Image (cartoon, rainbow, N blue to C red; front, side):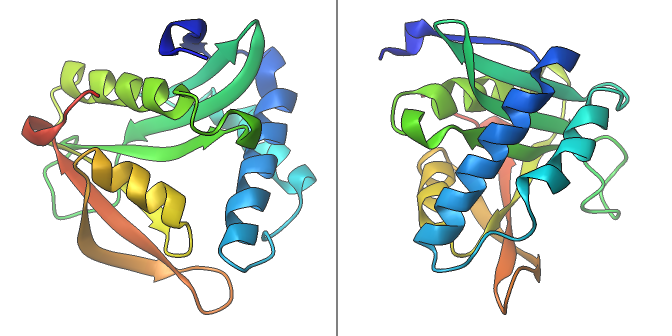
Length: 175
C-alpha cells in the first residue's frame, strides 16, 4: 500500500465502533509486545470515543481510511500537560492508533503529518505526547520523527510508566 491510498478525514459519529475496535486491537498488540495484558476491555473504550468529537476547538479527531475502511485514528487538542507553559502554546497528540494489520504501511505517517499540520496552522510552540515505556515500536516511531523525551512521566499499568515526549514546532519534519 502506498501513502496515496490512505485518506485522512475528520471522524464522524458513525465511526465510533471502528475507532473503538482499532484502539482495542492496537492497544492489545502493543501491550502484548511489551509483556503486559491490555488494561480494561474494548467496551470500556467506547464511551470516551463516543464523546470525543464534542471537545472544543482546536480539537481534532481524524480517521485514516484505506479502500473506504477506517484503519487508523488520531486525537489531538490544545495541551494542559504543562500548566507552567503559556496558555495554548502546546498541542497534544492524545492518541494515534493504527489497525495492527496496517502497521508499517504508511497510515501512521499520514496521521502524524496531519498532526504536524494542525500544530503549524495553530501557531503552537511544540507538540507533546505520552508514550507507554513498553511500547518500543511507538517510541521508535516518534524518535525517528524528531520527538525527544522531556523528563515527564506518569504511572502506567503494573509498575510501568508513560513517558513524556516533546517536539518543538521548528523541529517538526514531515517525512
